[in-house]
Image 1 (cartoon, rainbow, N blue to C red):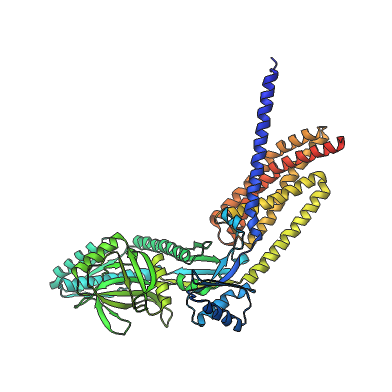
Image 2: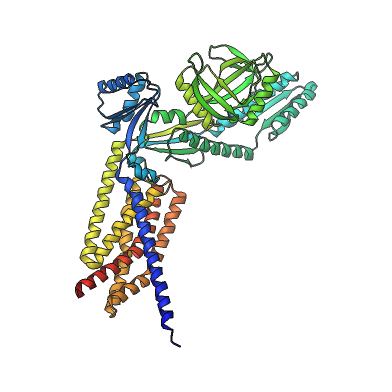
Length: 609
């Protein structure tokens, strides 16, 4: 039964519409990726940003200071509204040095920032150049060691201090509390004081319900050991690592570094990559900070003895009214006397704690305890505690109040930032620090792209010589492939180009050409079998599809495995390789298919014209 003419026309019309939709989709994808790749021709500039510049004459003084120090200014702009002065040097690699010179001249709020030169119309579309890794854009690498053993020792010390406070308050006599040793706290009492010992143990169990408690006899003495089991210690260490990762990420976000890489390395180490950071001193000061803030009532009998900034010793309650965990917001400022202070915003739970305490202790003092981990002369990390202020409670406090007595504006700023981002339960030590200068990164970019251009030139020449007309198609598809890959890397968040990533780009060229070679050899076979050019094109692309998919799929799976288990250079290479496979299949199959049809159609018109 023959198909009716109008039915054939409908089928042809639907087929033509489908081809047009596919063509429209391919062109749209190419245009979007081309626009995404466009910002990469506009480099970012390193700018020395000086805040709190109150007058134009102050900006002139800053320019004079830099000029006298041997710096050449490419551009300087003073914003009177924001009281900000931005300076761009002719040698961007010296930006960090210029910032250090300005700090030495008394300018407190100086930092080096990256400023985009992308046209505003591209920025309005949300487009930006792809991010560069440490080896290309310069920056700083830190490897930090997290001391979970010290964190456990600090917890046990707090338990011993709390036990002493409970003993004094309840007037439980005849109990000796030993300092923590061998990951345990020991309580010792004579047989006549066993009832008091039991009361103290019950109180401690109420405060620390997860403690493992064991009893033993030592001669005529009763000994109670308080410890965490091995399983609990591992859980605490894991929690410390998780908390350290989250806190460090928050601190880096507070510094305004959006493309940082923070990831665990091994069991007790954290790797931090800060691309684009030229002045590592500020990042190092904030990342390595272990400052903690807590608020305590004073205690006349017993308590925890701590020194003030003036060198006096006072006794405070070992249990804090609230800690930094209850702080939801902080801001550095100055009080009526112009002295630096930090304004605190508490959570509702923290507000309830301070409100209850302050209502019950109006007219009494409250101490602000500043704690941090520091290394002593022997290199051992210890907790250093200091009372930075003792203020009298004049009224019931709420969720907002401020602390003073911080000394310098820099200390107030750092403390505000650390409290906003969260304090660290476990001390951290920077065991490796590596700075990559922008000039070295620029050299890596030049060397890498020289290799890319060489590989591209050899590939283009081979394709033209070997496949002639089809070689033109392959070369056009290859150019579109590279543009699409750069656009895709610029478009996707979290993708960073590294030196191994450039190696991935070179490999992508080979894989893209390999796709075309498979197709073109199939086309040649079809032509030898006597097919027409259009038939050979259609059969060649259809026949090569399964081989192309199989070859690229296995490589894509390997790239995904490397992305999952690798970090640093390995991960950068794997990401570029995986994205390159996607763009290679897109350009090698879809794009070159349409280009081939257009080219042969144009050649046919020329011959018949």
